[in-house]
Image (cartoon, rainbow, N blue to C red; front, side, top):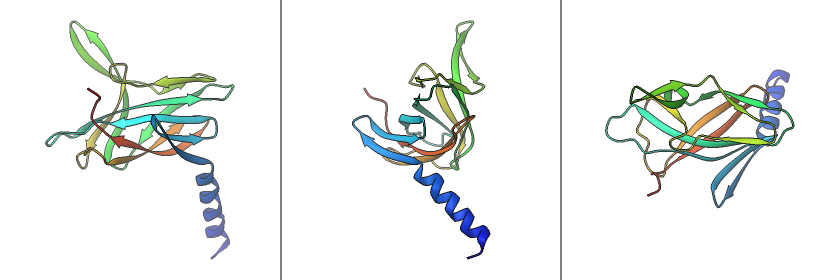
Amino acid sequence: MNIFKQGLLFSTLAAASAISIEASAQGQEIKAGEISVTQSVVRPTRGGEKVGIGYLTVRNTAAAADRLVAIESPVAEKVEVHRASIDSGAVRQHERDGIPVPPTGEVSLPSGAGHIMFEGIKTPFTEGDTIAATLVFETAGRIPMTFRVESAPR
């Protein structure tokens, strides 16, 4: 193995070891440095829908703020963070320009308060499956994670 490949392998393994995945009563928790992600779910899609909706909670234990600037996923053409507003009695969706995560604080995107929009999905989201994604932060960098596909609680 040449030096370039050895260095690439080492840096990949080092980055992977900095991310831990833990199971808890609330589901999977991803930790990467000062950032942790919990309650990451997407809802099952129906029929030929090409749009999926997801939710998550991001916690920052650092003394400085961070910002979620993008979400990427191989299962969708595009992933955006949306917020809803009411305009003349109609609900409108607006893409958010990132999500600030306060120092020693958290941000949640639960049903009704905002959501993650997976647009142009390539296969349906089926109950019990997982959806791979990468969260991109200004400071924390790229954090690979998965969303669980599960129905909304009744």
